Image (tube, rainbow, N blue to C red; front, side, top):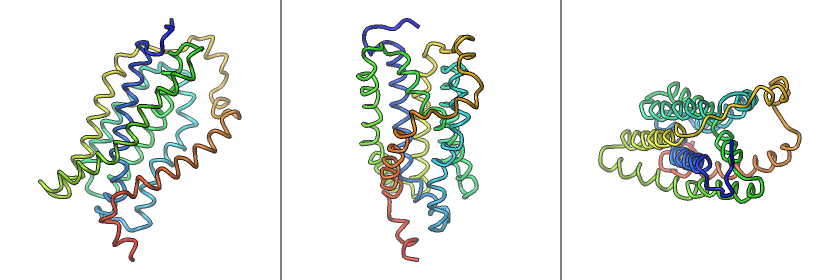
Length: 249
């Protein structure tokens, strides 16, 4: 792929927009997961388990998603993953039992196992080497904005819809909004250029099981693990009204 001297080439811009929609989809839902589980009748322990299930599934699927991303057309993977995201948002919205909600959380985790690193890979591959740091930093701005705005937006939409049509519709509205963001993200994903590695590159990577982990990433992964733990401990319990009774038990 020919790379331009600016970070805002076509491929990078499309990856940025797709990731921006993804982050809004994720952040608008995360604040309501624990309270919706309680709304469906889950106890305190099950609320915590359901809230963390998405991340556990994402971690478990990463050893498989990484080699697949390395060896297949990244554009196609992104399209399929965003379609899965749309389906997941709709499944959240229509879930009326804990098993259905757990199924949605598992699908959400599988989705993130792919798209979480895929968007960044597509973006970084499109950047000029001399502007890689600037480009990655700029790419992260979209996620930062979504993290700052998304949780409050999800809660505001939930409260607005609840006042008009009731609590069930309040949750449904936010989950459908999450699906809508993934659908919007699908548009730039479709417009991406195909990005399949050539045979020589695939052969150089070796067997898939040798590409599960890189020792150079251990320390950064360890640090970001604690950052994400701190962040999600806050966001998943931002709607306390239905959870207060659980903690009082």
